[in-house]
Image (cartoon, rainbow, N blue to C red; front, side, top):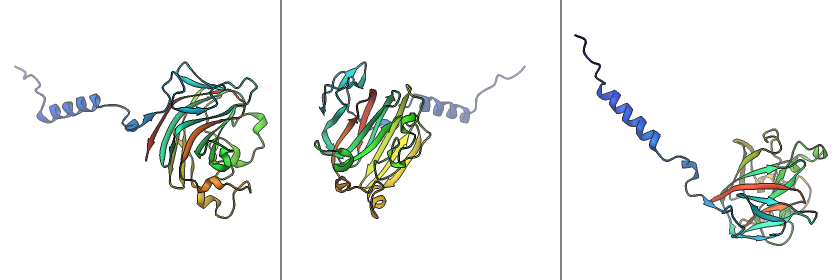
Length: 221
């Protein structure tokens, strides 16, 4: 008579471990992140609420010829990990302001990270520090990691002191230091007093083009 196969203690232990692993909470990388956009309205934001509006779980920038304007978080942030998704239209241009006051050009009185359709013909001859993800005038970003226009891109911005990292669709396109990059002068040869700021609002900086944002969240560091 054949003996029935009896799983060993070790096989039972392995099976138990697999069950525990499969039932563990997912998205552990999102722990301690706070949602900044509730998907329904612009509560928690200040600025241009005419050109920016909540629609179908996204923030839509729809300037309709009035200029994009800026939309900022009510709260100010210093060191943080900021995550969001964006969807470009053809030739779209926007920006992500950090450490910014509510008045003035955030690219200079704060810092601006470009949000831009790198593939648009009209942008073929920009300076390296003007393409998507770049810290405007200060640190150029790597190119070639955007998804085709119309698809959603994911981006992560990590700021600690004067260091910054920008991760686009899983690839690091900026990994630098504001102060180190500008110690011998800025790339655009302009004054950037905002480099001295270590706290301020985070905002979307419109330039008159249509695009969308969603899944906006932050973790303070």
